[in-house]
Length: 331
Image (cartoon, helix red, strand yellow):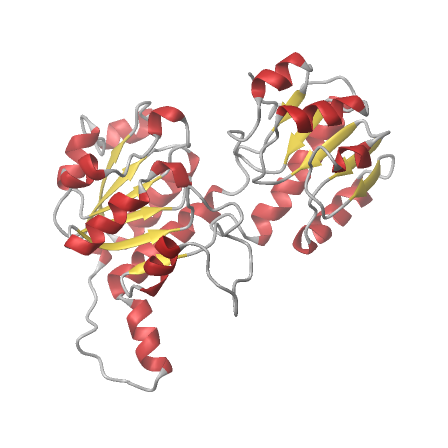
């Protein structure tokens, strides 16, 4: 059996080596290049391919892969919104993703960023860096004094709720599909507008499907409390960045943390030092002392990377054997 992997990073190689040692009967080859119509030929002779990229899996890409005899595609990530499923179905592709690799990694990052905003660590760090060791006027707020709204109570949202409970914050939540255990605790509001009206801070944990497009928008922000804190470490298309900037300018939004961006492909995970920065909106946000921007790193922990590698390669083997892994994508 042979598996070919695309876009393997240096930080993934230790996990990949562990997996290979546990599967001596599987031949593994890989490249650091992305899967494209041009690089699909590298997988010739493989039974399955393993991939991770923000680049679209277009009809042309899938056709090129099928042309070399490969129709088993295992993603090392959660998101599947960049796959042309009509083409995948026509070409009879088997597809898997890694829906749960480390909810803690993402939930922890979101709550760390919320804590940093409350304690104003960005302006304080900047003061200390220039040897200004005065406290005032950089005064913080306590998490336990906040009502925090959680939108989406799946694996990640529930970890975030537990973290908030540890801080002593009041938690309210909204989910189209409520969790029975959380329902017993009485933390759900009746509708999302109630959450907007009550929350001092709001964090998103929902997928970037069409029904969730731009949850943070002019209309929803207008329904929120004055001085609300917003956090988004989920998907970039959950927020209208122009509405966010307007809210920050007016003071309606007091603080904002983002780890994802609707137009992050080609911007995030690139070194722009000493080069013209191509996105004035993100440059503006980075410059603000009440905004924290991270480049899609919430998932990026040793545990999460290991799980993404191991689960995706396990699924690739299952597909090659004619089996259906538990993490197969149904479409």
